[in-house]
Image (tube, rainbow, N blue to C red; front, side, top):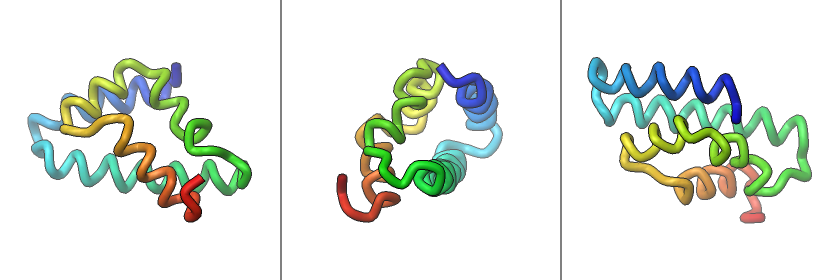
Length: 87
């Protein structure tokens, strides 16, 4: 479990009531895209599952995705796009 994802998830879940689901979802997607780009720079040989494993290991993050109407498949699509070749 990632402590950073844990705290970020709790913060964003609280932020949903202030900003609304759509705005928080957009911010989350932009953040995930940036995180994936940085992870790929560190490890260009990373697979989709390696990239999303911190998220899948953090129950609070999975709850946040559910609150935003997203699931693990959305993260896989973002990871595949970041990799650029559909690994």
